[in-house]
Length: 329
Ligand code: UDP
Ligand code: MG
Image (cartoon, rainbow, N blue to C red):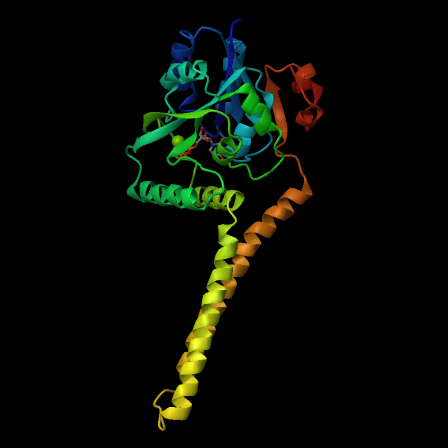
């Protein structure tokens, strides 16, 4: 029985890399034993990416594409791809060639050995700014300490997943899709493959500092309740400090006749400190409540504007949002 492989590639303004990516992928998949579909997910690009994908789809039947109705973000774009893929083995990779397609055969080899998830782990981050490397280093270690599930350090979304696992991930309804976390959460046989992360082939990094920060907060909040507890601990600590201070003031009042200490400074410091603690705690609570609000609304994760290479029969009703029969081919 030949195996069917699916590649999922999120694309946001990648007109400069798509053709090179296609060339490198084809070189790899021509050597793979089995059929391959390549599912590009256009995440509301504002450049010629979508047109390039349409052309590739015309030229090469292995290429399919989904086009989201606006920019929904990397994680949602990958989620959309996972909803549609038909392969038995699924590989997720970035469009900017930072995740070398040449690694895929080695991943498949691991899959043949019986692993259901093979994730790529970075050994180096060449040419990325010190700031990015440093913050990424800190974040992955913090997440490792705080998260309820063990999320391996220095892994991105580049991975191979078996159909069984994709079905589980697809059945998880949550909106805050920190895929690396979900992928670890599901369990199954997982293994790492080490690789050196290359430089982006062309174009700008789409993950601005703000987006990276929001992904990091997402990862922490979705997989850990520790931040909620932190404010409780700080509150307890503040209570102990307050009691000690009270005792100290009492001591001064009774035993030190002309205490030089004026209460004003202490009060000011205490007010500022407690104010800060309370605001931070409310902020942390807000992060969780905001997520509950997002989940409760129950909106679909994305809307689709156009698809290529998927017949309308295979579509689930939820997938067809905003699709008119004309752009279903
Ligand atoms: N991407 C996306 N939607 C976005 C931002 C990025 O689909 O809103 C895609 C992008 O085209 C690329 C991948 O996600 O294929 C990773 O983006 P990028 O290379 O900018 O991030 P980094 O490598 O810094 O993690
Ligand atoms: Mg990149």
